[in-house]
Amino acid sequence: MNPKNVIFSVLLATALGGCAAYRSPARETWPQYLRGVSFTDMTETSRVAKRPVFLGAGGQLVPAADDVMYGDKTANDNAAATQYMANLEYTLYDALRKPGISVQRAGTDVVVILVRDAIMEIDVPEISATGADTLRTISKILKKYNATFIEIAGYTDAMRNADAAYALSSDMARRVAVFFARHGIITARMFVAGRGAARPIAAQDDIGRLTNRRVEIRIAPAR
Image (cartoon, rainbow, N blue to C red):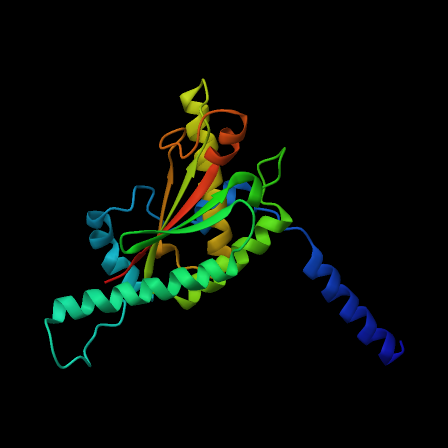
């Protein structure tokens, strides 16, 4: 076979592979990907309990302000963590200027809100091509800012069946967590929760319902 044809075939296959739609792995394999994940809310207590596992898995802590000669060390460390998270917030905000996505501060933490239709197919529970691109971007940033814990929480709009709402919200959260795990995010950093119709952020009208169906990624400094 002509060497030029070989090169062309390789380049074509690479290009086509890069355009292939992302598909979540079979649901029965999710526990393998999510080994090390905590299926609970990310509280201060749960982060402290998870810290040894996080460090044992290669996690990092926010660099302390050891080079500061003056002032209280605790205050300086707090300032260092605040600056670290401010840099993370700016990086996420700059990279995620897309409809249906917002980046917010919540104290020291940074919260990324992903409206469901911005990252998933409309009619099926699967991450869309646009959503995969967004989640890859977030994954790259989270790998750079690796001195953090991550809570991935799914929410729905108001539903008559609370069990169905929980199942749907849990599916969204776990689907995103599996994506992150497959893209190099240490699972020991992750907390995953499905919260059903709790904590609506918009009215329960036709437009508000689309906003309430969402995944929130809350990022907290590891210290």
